[in-house]
Amino acid sequence: MPGIINWNELWKATHIRGFRHHGEDLAAHWDRKAEAFNKRVMKHKERALEQVEAIGIAPNETVLDMGAGPGRLAIPLARIAKSVTALDQSEGMLSCLKENMQAEGISNINCIRKSWQDVTPDEIQVHDVVLSSNSLGVYDLKEALTKMDSLARRAVFIFTFTDGNRDDGFSQFLKGEKHSRDSVQPAGYLMIYNLLAEMGIYADVRIFDWESKEHYSSLDEAVASWKEMRDVPAEEEPKLREFLSARLTKDEQGLCMHRRSKQAMISWQKSPHTAA
Image (cartoon, rainbow, N blue to C red; front, side, top):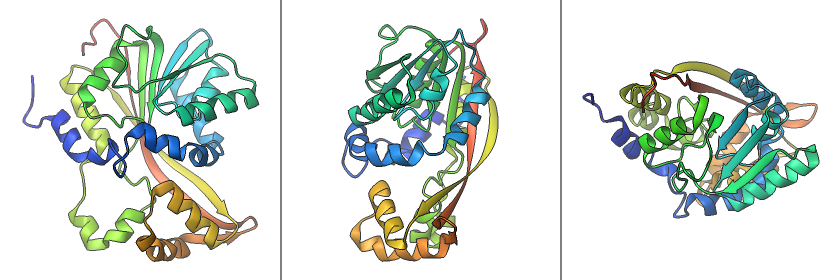
């Protein structure tokens, strides 16, 4: 029975920037970002291995990775699972994934270029596990969750940031402390959890503390990297330089950005009583 809050409509209202990037559709955005994104995320293998361990995949199981990107999770999962289906709407991302597969000697990943919104349940067979890691950039959350549940035989796993702080606080830095306090948005993972409960799916939530390091040879390199990955306009470069100058520290490899974030793992096991 619907409650006082319509979680699906709240999702649409508060995640509007997740559906388009500066006028581009998501496929075009990630095609443009694919090479730089691949170099950045594939370095952090320890995080991927922790997530794979949390999923607990068995050697005889199949995995559907929704929004697989360059294969940060698909590749380590494929080392254990029977097979992995990697779904992504970006041709650039899938090209990086295929290159990574070749470099790692992986052959049991099937790549499909399609968005989750465009996939119909009769196009893809049911998999033992369905996975989404920071890839729920969808307009209709309820439709997406229903589809994930219908294509999972054993379990569904969703990894997502808990606070929207994906840029290490740069957005808040630009807005200023007072404006940031006044414009706090509802935590997305709670919307997912509450919508699932409304759908009759009672999920588990586990919070992870992530820590990693990004190294740069100079401040100029750091600024250039951040401008590219985060679409920082030229007029905001002085603020970006100020932001990075305050956060970069020196170590034996040059300048280091210590990155810290919290992520939620929302998961549910399938049972005859689970209804979407």
